[in-house]
Length: 115
Image 1 (tube, rainbow, N blue to C red):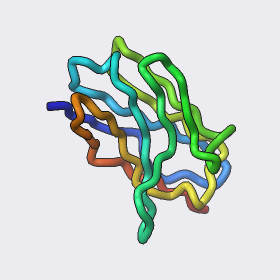
Image 2: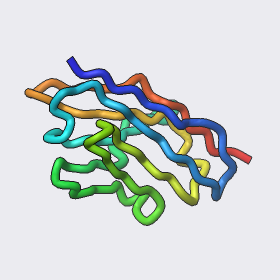
Image 3: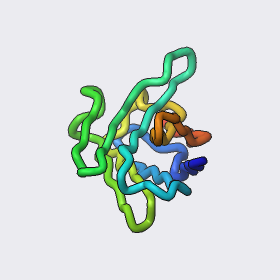
Image 4: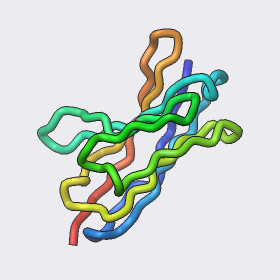
């Protein structure tokens, strides 16, 4: 069983920055890829960024150049640095991992970008 706990959401003005963090209880954190997803009201959950066990990263086109995903295996955490935020980035952000074929999700943290 893996528990993921996100933190760092909040209200920010357009153009501002936020840093999300996700801490895992998993014992095999270092060998698993980690990801951030988001879901806006009325929309499907979408992948935002991933980071592999080998630190390879992937970003959806809409956040490239603005968001950065990093991981700290010693702390069993994955962060998402979000810069130049836009109103369309408003969503609940979820941390995700998969271990032994089982998907694990955090409860999410709300990011609201508004003036």
